[in-house]
Length: 131
Image 1 (cartoon, rainbow, N blue to C red):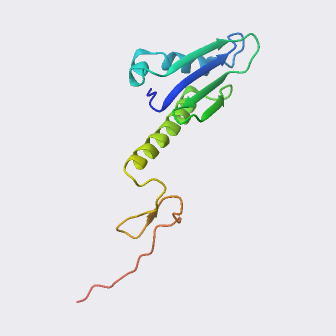
Image 2 (cartoon, rainbow, N blue to C red):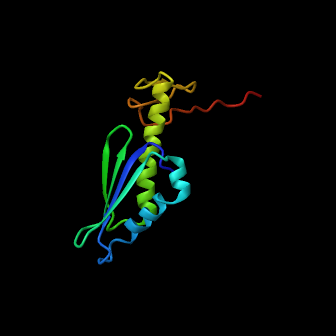
Image 3 (spheres, rainbow, N blue to C red):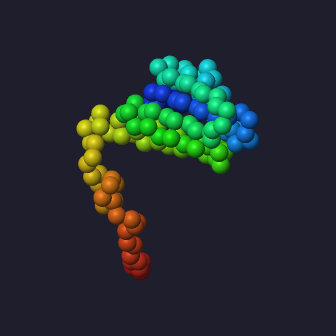
């Protein structure tokens, strides 16, 4: 698991409920040596509660905080949520560094990319072969 773009992770769960499995698995993955090597500055905290629903709170480098209730989620779903958000932020950072943050991009195919992009592929036409 990559911890890029993440500054702090809090995992909170009650081990006496059957809903904490995915939160405990997430905690094990983010505290592993390979995950720690991807971002040594990321602080990982955990709280064991007597009565509490399992929660993962993630603070990203841009100071946004995402709170995930994990009671009905699998570890794969949790990892997908976290990694997708981190990848979006990483892409936005790279676009900003390249000087194209917030701009509309146009491809050579005449399709637009960006917030204003229209859904659709374009049009095709049939030109019969000349004999």
